Length: 220
Image (cartoon, rainbow, N blue to C red; front, side, top):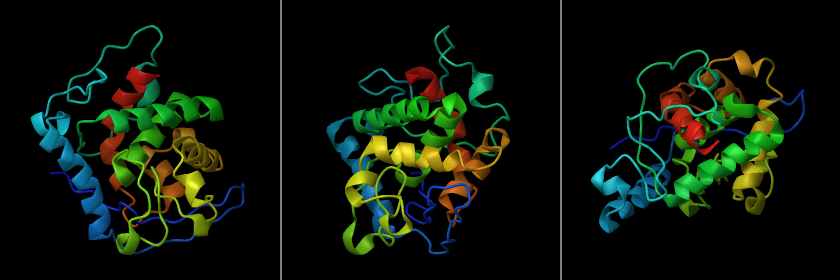
C-alpha cells in the first residue's frame, strides 16, 4: 500500500503577492493517513477499482500505467510535463469521488487561467495531500485545522471550513496562490507545489506528476 507522506503537514499562504507562508514542521498524523486508507479500503470491500487493481474506474477514466493517446482537443504531453517527471512515480486507482474532485480541480485551473500545466500541479498536489478525497475535520487526529482536497487551514487565511471543503473554492484558492509564485510555469512541479503548500515533505509532490498528467489529459 502506498504511504501518504504529509497528508496534513502544511501551512497556509495568504492571497497577495507579498504573502509569506509560515513553515510547518509537524509530521503527518496516523489518523489522517488511516482516514484516507480506510476510504480506499472500503473500495476493496465493495469490489471497486482499489480492490481489483483494474486500470479504469466506473467512469472509464484510465488510472493504471497505460497511457491515453492525445487527441486534438486534449493537451499534448509536453505541455503537461514540460520538464519530465522527477524520481520514482506512484499511481493509485481512482473511484468516482476522486475523479469528480479531479474534474473540479481541472475546471478551476481553466477558470483561473493557470492552464494545463497548472492543472497538473493542482491534481498532483491533491493526490499527495488527500488522495483526491475531500476530507473534513478528522477530530483529534486532524493536523491543526487542515481540511479539504488541499488540506488548507482556515487559521492561515485559506477560508472558512465550509469554503475549503468546497472543491471549486479550494482549488481556486490554490491556483490563486500559485499565480503569486514568480515563474511558477518554469519551476519543477514539486517546487511550485511546495512554495504554495509549505509541506514538511517538500519532495513528495513529484511522485504524482505522471498520473496527474494522465488525469488532466483525459478530463481536459
